[in-house]
Length: 427
Image (cartoon, rainbow, N blue to C red; front, side):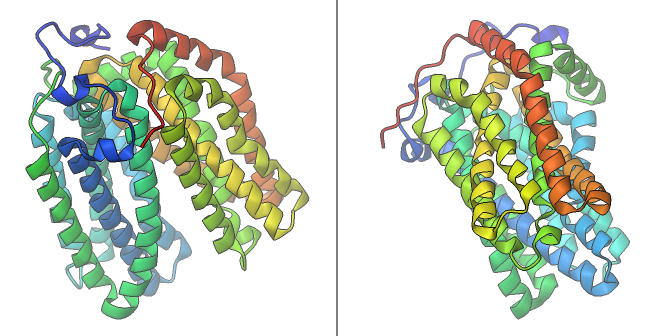
């Protein structure tokens, strides 16, 4: 990290927010009683809903105008690649002196982009340009929002808070696609874009009303040089490097497996995708809500293996019920992200938490796209079932090979921050 942020604690003059210094909330309801967390949670919910509707509308519009499966897929998921640009250039703005103002500015820019998509007759080239621009803003906004989250809740409740946000985002995405299908049939893509713009505006308003301008971060000058310096120091640390590798690559390879559900079983892909969504939501709920911090650390390795191993069954092309059960179990393994994120936060100086979490999120999203591309290329030559098996085996092999490095990172995090108080499983 840069010289002004090498300490793993806040500067002497900084003081944590009141909510961050309080004892850990007992559960989701207690977290939501915190005005600032509730605001961050609500704004994320609205932003995810807007992004889902806008992506669905753009994909439908592109398919109608071009008939190209490639362009349609890029229109729906291509924005994830723009997150890398944010992580490599201006992610340090997530740790600026005024994170609330930064988040409001980024959401204002996102609102302008979402509203522009609603303009009928806009050329597709312009729409793709807006898509990449919105992906760039989204990556910076994610880093800023997660930095604010780390200041708003106690360290012992961080996994609980991320769990609730993950569950909500997953549920809203599923509902957003369902609602988007209905709205597209009734009001058309341009008005769906307008609905997305309204939701983006509401997300901005919620942040403006609920989140205070408070920060325990060191004052730094954000920009390209600061972003590069922080990223270089981030990857120079072996513990953080091991954690990022395990947050990105095994997950991305398994997402590649999921990307092959349609060519693997065209008539039953919906059931497999639903099983995956259910397993992911249940895993986040159980790990974030029911397990203490110590148990999350203890079970992290098993969960990371669970993410990949069930997909090995696809080598035998199992019947649908067994295949759905395997996908359900594997998707619960995505909850291993929570303890790994806790460990990464423990190894991160307070002054750069937003940027580090933004880089983690951008890398994870990018590797999901890479995993899907690798899976598609492998399936061209090996067939979907064999390609899924190969990617799952690679994911499990990486988890096994990096077990010691991740364990050392967890130990270093505990020494740096101290063992966090346990999160109660009570209401």
